[in-house]
Structures are given as C-alpha cells and as structure tokens.
Length: 178
Image 1 (spheres, rainbow, N blue to C red):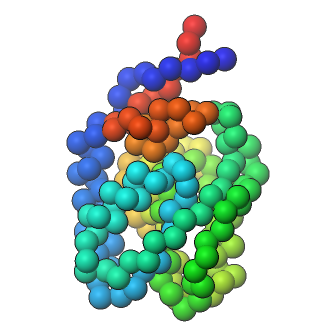
Image 2 (image 1 turned 90 degrees about the vertical axis):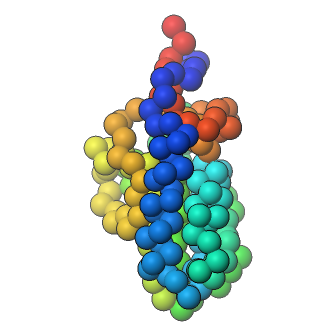
Image 3 (image 1 turned 120 degrees about the horizontal axis):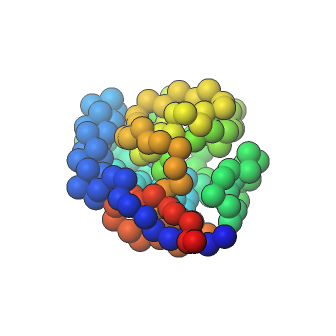
C-alpha cells in the first residue's frame, strides 16, 4: 500500500512555540553547565537543530548523533532496535540529553536509556517532540515533552514515511492512497 500526506495535525507555528517552551526549561535546568545533546537520526534532526538554537549560549552544548532503526519501510515499529551509528564522545560524568522526534511504544528510548546508563553519565534525560502515550508498551520517563498526539502515523518536520516527507514544516497525518 502507498501513502500520501493528509491533514495538518500540528502547524509549523505551533511547533516553533512549543520548541521555545522546551528550550526555556532546558536552559533553566542546565544554565552554565555542559550538556551532551544526542540527536537520534534521522527523524529528530530538524527538531534537534531548532531546539539547540532556541536554548542559546547559556548552556555549553556538545552535539552528538546516533542512528537507530526500528521502523524500516513500515508504518509500525518492529520492536527491534538496531544501532547503526553510535556516538563518539565519552559521556562518563557528563550531563546527557537524548533528543528524539517521537515516542510511541517506548522500546527504542528504553533501550537507549539502558545503553547510555552503562556509560556512567552524570545525569541522563530524554526530550521528545511528539508522544503517543496510548501506544506505550515499555515504561519510559520523558523529562521534556512537546505534544501528546493520537495513534496516527505522522510525517513532516523530520519524520518520514519510507524516506519521504521529512521536509514539510508542519506535522501531517499520513493517509493510504485508495
């Protein structure tokens, strides 16, 4: 089955407003400290960039990138997390913030928490733009969360379907082409 971009779920303006809110909280929590921000590629790249710009110079940010996969070409998570590219920074005794586009089942972020806690960070927190709470099968605590959304497959603002639609500035619901 093929899919198309459907209705707007969250506008670009709403996203930018929410990013400013999250950035203010992060800035307050880490002002004057070093913070290793880990972007989960590829989906979180747009959110990550806008969020770090909004945080500003008050926080000493080190950027890192991690590539994982649990979707492949499907609209549903496979439940198996695969690390395709790990970070290169030693995070022992450092504040770490994972920045992810979306959490649904919680499997990927629970896996990352377990993985990074073995590396002895000073602190470890997670930030997501979108939260599909009704899909959670694995409990995960998210300190910074943007929007709670329904169990719909969404694209835009970095999120894709089979590599398409990441470039859209708003978040859209994906609909099957009939």
